[in-house]
Length: 337
Image 1 (cartoon, rainbow, N blue to C red):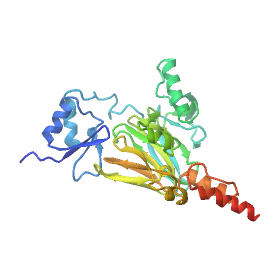
Image 2: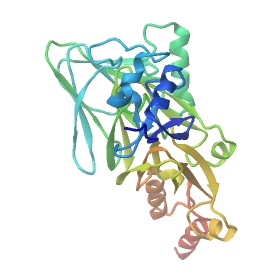
Image 3: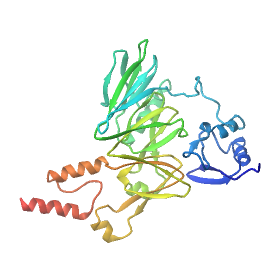
């Protein structure tokens, strides 16, 4: 059978291909691609890390492919089981084997069984065992994203399985993300992270373009989750997962963008007309995301919910979105009183 050009590879946010299986193999043998490289062909459910595609993983033993990490399953992060409970106000219940651990934002714990030991750690704990400067840099990344210097670690110090639960801070959904299947990285808005298996690193993702830095609703700095374990995100309202093909574009309200794979190109675009910007109520800019890869969107950003609450209380103006008329409408409400 002829070698068909059917494979695509995501490199630096761009889709490369189509290429034959032989050309794909040559890329891995030369070190151009790695185990975390996202690949795709017709018939697959979406862009997937090379290490998770049996047809491609056979190429990883040659060249500069990364050596398999320690552990029977090949994962460095702790492997945890979980259940997501509820519909609108969800919580995730994580099951830990002896010695396993999870990390979470301070204040998110709902309950834990008697064998769980809780400890406050500096940063995200991924640099434990390293030097003081490594730990300081890890904690500094969290400060830049507006989070606390400290996180909470929950470890099973007992002899049997133990459980710990983490609750969502406001109505919405919890998104489980297997970083191992996603190529080891996921970019998310800075307040989306809820908890993760121990070994997952929470850092900062600087947007390269000035437009994103100045006008992106979530600011210049977003969080990046790295590792090969499970992480859990929380977002408001209903969550939708979009799979974008190579070159496929989607324009999104900046506050509705929850997370995206690193293969997605993310930029900020002007709405297009002064009239729409001032009187349309949708703000001056929207996010433009281009495939290949997956993006997660939320129907109710917390900033929008907070804006509605402020409006109902008679507080003028909204911080993150809306038009100039929003402030004028607030003034009108005050004058009526």
